[in-house]
Length: 355
Image (tube, rainbow, N blue to C red; front, side, top):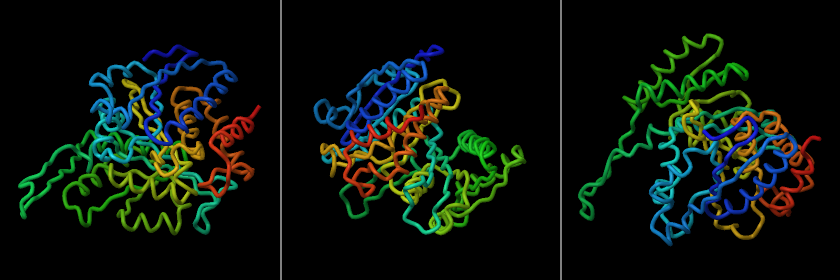
C-alpha cells in the first residue's frame, strides 16, 4: 500500500450513468474533509465503464487490477448501462475487482435516519448491518450451458461454499457484533437446500463457541425477509451467503427509506489489497444526465472509506453532515420527495459538516 501517515491514493472509477454524477460530489466533500482534518488525498481517475466496453470491447484493460493494486482504496460509482448485458458489465469490472483483491466482506450498514422515516410503521431506530459473503457461494463461476438451441437445452450453476470462506465471513460478523449490540443473525435455508446450507449452519455453530459474548440465532431466509419488514428494529448484525446477503441488503435499504442513500464496502480485512467502496443504487439510466441523482449513498460510502483508512473523525463528520441534511428536510433530491439537484444536496451536506 502506498499511504503515509497523512496521505492516501484513491482509485476513482465513476463508471456508468449517475455514477459519473455522484462520485464528483463525493470527491468534493472528501477534499473539504481532508483540508479540515489535516490529511491528503490523491485521486487517480479511471474511465472503466460500459462506454469503454462499447468502444474497446473491455470494461477495463487486461492489466487493470495491476494498475490499481497499489492504491489505498477504490471509490466506485456504478456499473451497468442499456445495450451491455449485466453479466458482461459485472463480470468485466466489479466482480474481478472483488475477487482479484479478495474483498470477501461486503458490508452494508442500514440505518433509518431522523427526518427520513422508512416506509414501514415502527421503523424508527432501525440500525443494523448486513455482512454478505462476497466472493464465493451461489455466485461461483462453475457451471455452463448444454445443448444450446435444442429443446433439451439446460443450464447448470454450482454453488461453492468452502470451510475457509464461510469461517472468515462468519468470524468477521461475530467480531463486528461484539463491537455493537452483541446480537448476530445467520441467514440460512437448511430446510430446503440440503448440502451447502447445513454446512453453513455447522460452521456458524462452531464459530459461535469462539464468541461467547455474542447472542446469535439462525433464521430461514424466507422467514427472515418477512421479519425484516415486520420488526426491522430487532436486528443488529445479519450474516449471509453471497445471494442471501445481496437480496437482504437491498430489501433493508428500502426499509431504511430508499436505495439512493445506501452505501456499501467491499473489504479485504487483511489489507493485502485495496478495499472498494460504492453506493448500492446502480447506474439509474432513467435519471442519468439530469443532475438530480441523490449523492447520499456515494457520500456515505466515502465515509466508510475514510473510516477504513483510519480517518475516523472525518468519517464521523461526513456521516453527521448527511444525517443533519436529511433531518433538516429542506434539501432533498426527487427520490426523497424533494426537488434539489445533486449539487444542491452536496452543498447542503458540506454546510452541515460539524465545525
